[in-house]
Length: 395
Ligand SMILES: Cc1cc2nc3c(=O)[nH]c(=O)nc-3n(C[C@H](O)[C@H](O)[C@H](O)COP(=O)(O)OP(=O)(O)OC[C@H]3O[C@@H](n4cnc5c(N)ncnc54)[C@H](O)[C@@H]3O)c2cc1C
Picture (cartoon, rainbow, N blue to C red):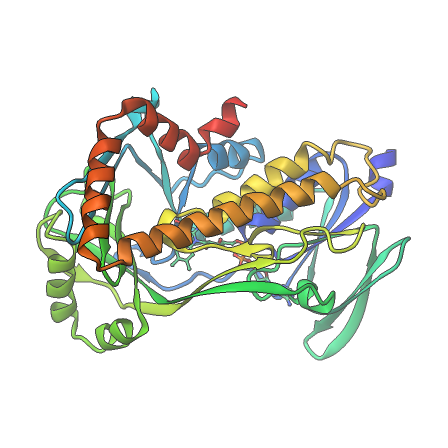
């Protein structure tokens, strides 16, 4: 056993962020235990694809490829088209403008998790433990996790704990880390639809007064996943529509950008909140990553990408043989991740407010701004670099 393996790490939560963190640290020689309630289960599917999809940036793709976990079901998108309900200007981004062959990929969550978990099971430095985290006790020397394993309580001792147990993080709660919330007053409605015209590898997003509607390309040219943020009232009403009524509503809401919506899979809707934990490193031996640290509005498809960005930054510190619990080791990391999260949360909140403002003067300013932006190639290139993580790839 080399000296790095003397440092044990427990990762609570085997979602995309926790699983990728486990594989990355195990690859550097750390003895990793990954805890989750159960193996990931396939979510609802329709037309042969998972309804849950995430847009992954080139930077996230690089990270997943480094741990040999890139799923085969990944649909590259090469263009983005953004416009609004009352606007006259639209923004079009093209991969060629950033000298790339794609802007990112739409990835189905089930095959992504299946691939990550296959790698977790194969890795000799990783132990899987099943149970629900119920409590965490920290000392200067170690961390103890309490797990509920089907009614039987057990404990896990470790040198270092990484919490990637999602928005309702039990670790965060056990350590009394407070959370600031920005309620959006919106729900996200998700489904998969068949469209009359092919999506042309383009991510379409229309800002409606009530919230943004995204039609995201899949590997099949006529299938798109839908993420439609809207008021609770609208979501509740739209859930009761028949499939054909919903297709008509969606055709109108998308301005028939892909022709008629011909078929829709069952719809799901859940409340949208933005939130940020008060600390990313609440104890010298504990870090929060991914949704356990912050939850962002899905309008920019950034959630998992920010979690992978946490991991990317973590790996600049967690080199082989580093004692991860060393006092002060994570101070700068924690400050930077909180600042980055705060900036993203405020930007997305601002964007949502800007596009949701019915004032005609604000509408005029928005249109003028979008038109101005649309004529500035260099600014668009910067925006693409930021949104796709290219800025970090080159930095
Ligand atoms: C509608 C919608 C669309 C989205 N689209 C995108 C997108 O296009 N691009 C993007 O990047 N992001 C997107 N996101 C966000 C993305 O889904 C999340 O950011 C991402 O899932 C967070 O990953 P995670 O690994 O941090 O947490 P999670 O995926 O929530 O995983 C947490 C894990 O912890 C486990 N766990 C929880 N509690 C416990 C416990 N007490 N004990 C043990 N285990 C526990 C869970 O079982 C789970 O496996 C979207 C979100 C929504 C709502």
